[in-house]
Image (tube, rainbow, N blue to C red):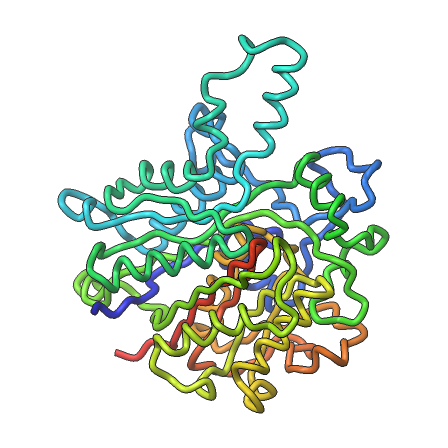
Length: 412
């Protein structure tokens, strides 16, 4: 089995259009949630979101090609361009066949679906663009990234709701560990801040309606949490086998040591209240790493700011770690970014790796009235300097799908 390492990270988020800006704003406690500008949300009960701001895809993509990409694909291609530049990776010759792309997407091209459906209803089928299907399909983020990167190895999209990005990283890690590839570009991307997307989640009563104060609307693990805030963006990791990374002199940011996945087999949208499905995924990642639960000292939580998820995740953490759960420094990023849905796991894995690399654990904002049922160390005091050795990144999605990545501070 090959050892797998992280040699690069990139991100486009509601708190920054590159990884350094996003990370610095995260640890400073800045929030990217505000009133929606993408469409007129005045008739909606939820009118706030974590939008990516001032994003210009033509900085990374020729204008003609950018017009033929949905926003989530633009995010993925732009993040990949930044990833390639920062790591100095160039795929040429036979190396292209040993490099792949796996990017998770939860919903795909809603904006184009809505736009083209309106054309169909008003003007008939002849007005539909021939690029409609290639634009909207979820795997186009991975497909376009593979084209821009020149990667001819495994090329796929995983669609597992809000666990999509984490499952994609887990699959990419597995491909390298088993020797199927030397290099994998992986993570998650999403952009569904659209009238239809918002209407659907609003109908479910899943979104926060704290419109008068967007900056404090997303409150992971707080007693006053009233739903999640939708976000958008992308987080990508460059994974390599340790031998490949050493051979090209790559800077190693962290090691991937475990991946766990599970299913609740319980409900379409609600997690199990005893946290069993979530705990199974965490236990699987720890077991694969061949470490003790007490070795884990940081968790990047799913922490959606919904009543049930935050309670169930807390319960699951206690189930897995016992008394040690109270010693773990936990961070929930969605208070600052909103919930990136299929992109969340990618972004949060990036932040977990940055935590190991920098020795800074992000705080969790908006813990105004801590929930007594959520009584672990969620970083209410803000970001802190603490060198974590192991970081667990959690993602859980509709359909009862759970995924966890376990990263380790790199040691040669």
